[in-house]
Amino acid sequence: MTTFRPNAATYGIPSLGAGDGDKDRGRDGSKSDTGTIAKSKPKTRRPSLYRVLLLNDDYTPMEFVVLVLQDVFNKTREDAMRIMLHVHNQGLGECGVYPFEVAETKVTRVMDTARKNQHPLQCVMEKQ
Ligand code: TYC
Image 1 (cartoon, rainbow, N blue to C red):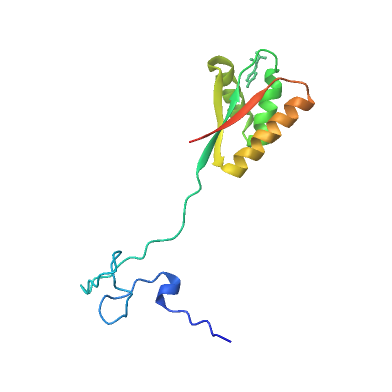
Image 2: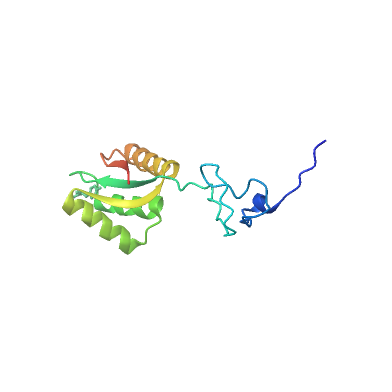
């Protein structure tokens, strides 16, 4: 059985250049030996974000849109009214910005609840 032996690199702690094996090599593998502390690049990636947009139509009741914005997008009554009126006047408007799967779930919830209530309300997502 092999034993897990954590070292400084395990925790992303930068190592000193001299006398530390290969850990002080640059990106191209060359030995720099400057004695300066090299920051290790964090291996995290920010998720792509998606805007969720509501589209205007002539038939969905304003109150229904306000309730959807409160329920699905957790908006206050005041924010929901503001967004609904923006969509009504401008043709479309942003309800929020989320990682892909969150945005997708919100679009599905809006479309499902609109269909169940026989309203033509449309909701889409676009990469930011
Ligand atoms: N235009 C609709 C009406 O006058 C209201 C509405 C607002 C519909 C926003 C959709 O995304 C929407 N009843």
